[in-house]
Image 1 (cartoon, rainbow, N blue to C red):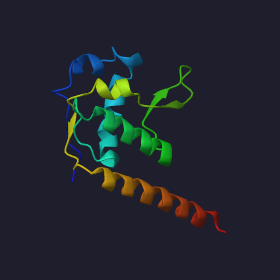
Image 2: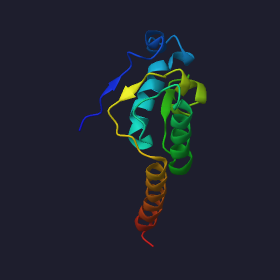
Image 3: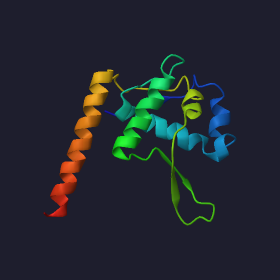
Length: 128
């Protein structure tokens, strides 16, 4: 199944994505939230749920170390991982993807299982 998305209902989306916002990283942030919807299980950002979208995105980052978006270093030598802020999520109210909704319990179960599986994989790869 493909990941489909729509930004038409995001207020001032053209300004956000034309590099006129957030240090020119507007589209990078939106793109990251589109892909993040796959693991947050929240396919739409609304005025009612944007806080939960932020919390789930941040939880996945904190527990699993998932990068959310990266920007090029000023000297062009590499990239810096950046954190999504609450304001970045709030500015994208109206963003929609075709991701199915996960309940809080489903999200927490997925997060815990994924963290344990990564730890097991790390041990297996250590060769000990």
